[in-house]
Image (cartoon, rainbow, N blue to C red):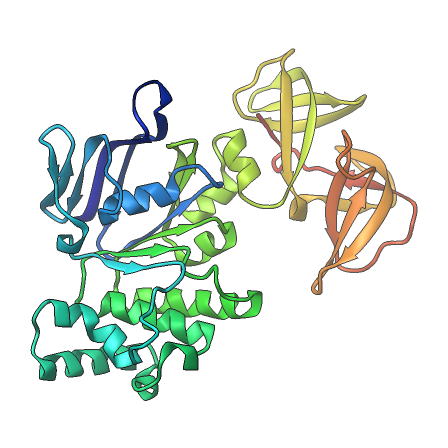
Length: 356
């Protein structure tokens, strides 16, 4: 059974001639025990969609169901307020009460629901123990690290067993090292407690690591959705291919087709690539992930010869730039060691080079 169903949701800011459409007919489901990431660039509508589900934004048309309960229906003029939707919310800023202890922050929602003090204390103790915070109940937010504050915000969202947890950029306030640790903790927690979660993020690595399914939004519509692996390995559109992963982008003209493959002319170099809906004679964009480019000091098949410009040390590998950065025909590739100056052949395997 779906824990959350959104059907043909539209939302705009302003009205009349000055109306700015943000969501343009978005539909999605969230199944029990599933984590769905809303991914996309700034302005794509992902946060607006989350806020509409939460009841913090009013859509124009469409409907929203939480379980079997309808909480919004534009045609019927039905809108259940946010406080009655029984959703767990984790905000980007955590939004903890600075003058309340961890116990009081986590138990505040239960207090509003008129639960007695003994039951509140027991429930708070239980959820804090699940998140490894049992020893911090009497501390105040300013006495906690960023990661601990994030866990308190999650505990507050979980304490009354909501059917769906909404996470708005839950890791963005953490530094890079802590974000990696928190990402693993959050995924483990979601799996262990069998949570249903809808998470907004702009970080594709975060979305792929934590979610079971990704909805990629582009200008108010869902561009593509699927498992993290399918989104990364078989992107259906140029937008998806460019948004997911670190990529090289080449422009050229398709000069020959052979079934699912085609030959593209890139500044005089003929390259075989996998065709994605283009035809002979058309201009096309070729995309290949950086990690799929193979380097050779001698001539090889399906390759472009370019001079090395520079190498940048990334810790576990070097990222090398060939040609001039930002110019037509420049390429990047990874190397396990720093390359010597000179010219190299960059092999672009046909099944890894996608034409759009």
